[in-house]
Image (cartoon, rainbow, N blue to C red; front, side, top):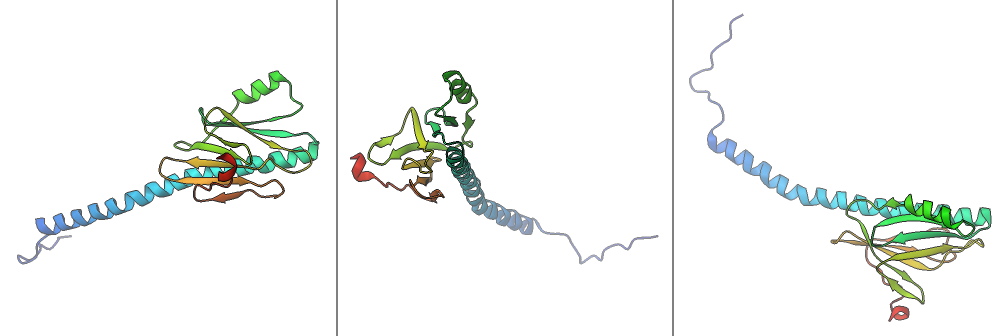
Length: 175
């Protein structure tokens, strides 16, 4: 089989055409990268909020089912979370603390606000889930240094509300 030669008038792409395509691809990447980064960051923040609200739901249900108060511990400095029960021994509490789950990469707890008690932005914050089925009113503020989310714990609601911004619920109580 023989291949035909191209006609003398047909040519490939010119250097200018290739340069224009490269510039256009570069512009598209420059526009897309911030959106991809925002999506990845948003997913990490949403994952942290989902994990915390899921843990809270489980603790609330366990407290009612077992008729024992449960606690969600948040170490704001180490960025880890664990839970305990009121009837645990000191040794078992230490074991639970050593098995703490880290927050997703880049996400940290800015502070935890408690109704009537103010905010805690360092050390350990503890949210109590009562055997009677209610939770200590609190708001966990998550951040990734660019954005913030708030996870709201209302005493008598069965769900935990997530807001896509920093919501200061008890600003008068903490002033």
